[in-house]
Amino acid sequence: MAKEGVALVLAARPGRAAIAVLAGAVEEHPGASALPVVVADFAALEAAVGEARARGPVVVGWSLSSADFREAARARGNLPSGGEVLHVAGGPHPTADPLGTLKAGFDLVALGEGEHSLPRLLLRVAAGAEPRGPGLAWMREGRLERGPAMPAVDLDAVPPFALRLRRFGPIEITRGCAHACRFCQTTHLHGGRVRHRSARVVERYVRAMAHQGMRDVRFLSPSALAYGSEDGAPNLAALEELLSRAREAAGPAGRLFLGSFPSEVRPEQVTAPALALLRRFVANDHLVLGAQSGSERMLAACRRGHTVEDVRGAVRLALESGFRAKVDLIFGLPGESAGDARETRRLMRELSDLGAEIHGHAFLPLPGTPWQGEPPGALDRETRLEFERLASRGRARGQWRRQEALGQALEASRRGGG
Image (cartoon, rainbow, N blue to C red; front, side):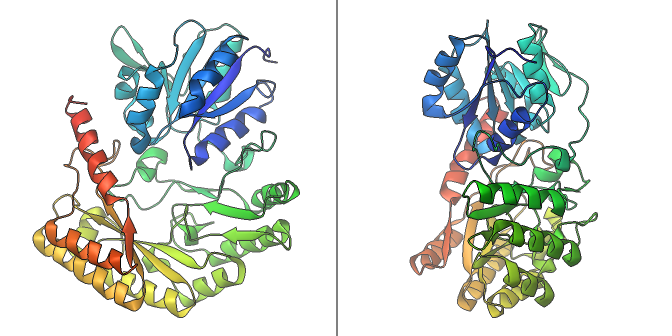
């Protein structure tokens, strides 16, 4: 059993579900469960690390997306390191760019899934042993080294959140994606094999949330209607079992959310039976539809696996079934021509006239994706004006301005300028 003087401080960002997952993995690990775990946002990290350091060794855990990385690196620079303070960074960005992460000042990178590697790292630190090991990457004499890969995580064997710490988040029901979209890190982080948390285990954790007075249960999935599927296609029988078990476990006051953030629906999977199933069980009044472009050519280039007509049909069906439709579109995709942008604007107008809301994104060249070396996206003048016109009518929103700036920062970092 680990001695109590070794602490884990998890650096938290709002909405980062991984923090609850990692805290849960430690508190349910048979060897590491006695370790004190502290969750602190970036502003409170210095105080949290200082307090923990006064009692013994500290591991500071960071779970980072590309959007978080620059801010996290600055926060890391304000904290002590060396001796009894060890900084380990995991998540999509460090996994995709371990060398850049280590050069930014982190001591170790947790590659891929952290539910197994983090508790084992903590136990090595507690025992005074060499912290480097399986599932990690580090620098030695200026060169990147990696430990042996860890086995894939069985979602049924690890908790979706930290019950004892009361650190809750969405319940991840599916990990991985069968659709290797060229702009997305999910498949390239977890591989093409899709894993699901069983309905039986989800039911148990929903019941635990209800016992803690938690009313709302949100599910995390890259493809909401593909739960229980091995090839990414809808499996409505498996989805019905999941939702019916969760509905009963949540109790009369409980509410289920699926198909809204942090899960979305692929347009070609939207059918009348699927929507009828959702209407029976979920509380969300809208669906997030991943359209991404109004150009058939760009959808093919992205490897999306659906058509523009699939998007139109999905929006119509969603609206007819009583859901509001929120449609994700990415602007400035690699190779996008003026004609492609014009087709996307045409789709924006058409869908907004039907009653859909457009969610706009600027393309980000995320590390670890096939398009990581492409230039960042930006809205051309006509698209910007069209988006602002729709936004003034309450038909469009999004963080594309922030993403344009982030894309420039990612490119500068890749070129050695950031």
